[in-house]
Image (cartoon, rainbow, N blue to C red; front, side, top):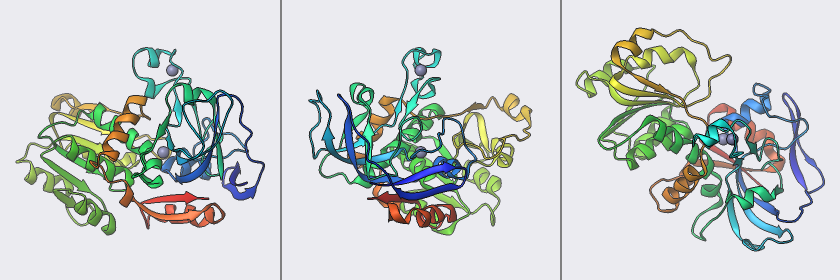
Length: 345
Ligand SMILES: [Zn+2]
Ligand SMILES: [Zn+2]
């Protein structure tokens, strides 16, 4: 089968390799779509190495068709269209026991410990079936939407951590695919006003189409000033940072209202260090939170939101390349020309 094999930092290519052999209780998935994620870019470039194996096949935003069913599997049949929640929490570490399985300290994941979606066929280990990580897609739902349930689940976790709710004013910094998912989730959660800050014109336009109340180009406008005006000087209730740029954190803390929340959603580039005026947090009683991965409940809720038509994932999938053209897909993704770049068989 064709697969994109990662052999080291910056060393990857579409190759012909043996398809996976499945055992009892497992599934073999024929790829529908796999989306390239910002994390994948960091892995391909060698900037992220935690839990990364060489050689391996990465890709963790996956949908497809059940191609083969292992002995003893009764819940799925050949031909079923499914999406996969790629993270399997251990259930037994302090994070899992505290109800934060998204931050599991001993997680196993497809696209990391197990080969992932940038391949014609993907093996789904038995534990993923046993724990409900394989999600059946209704006929009306595309493989694009199926693959993007995973990042949507991550965003839903971020929204929950940030506490976005009725009548909030929300600032979303960055309108890449993740920022655009946050925008839609905030609207679905009942936000009164969602402001999006983004330097790329195409992305600002997309934010507007998806319902942003205000879009700001921070290179040409004073973000702080515009937000002050829009909030009567109070600042935003919730700020979600969907760009991994440490240098902008301090300025953004200043436009969160007293008692508001700043969610540092995106993973930060480099060492992630920056200097902040701690008194902004102190005097303004700002809650600062992070967000990592998703719980199985987040994934199911994300699926319900997308399937119920509350969130448009379909139009975020702007490009699709076959496995053989992975290099082109990778470069398109890096250029920021599109939104979500999808890979197909
Ligand atoms: Zn991802
Ligand atoms: Zn755990």
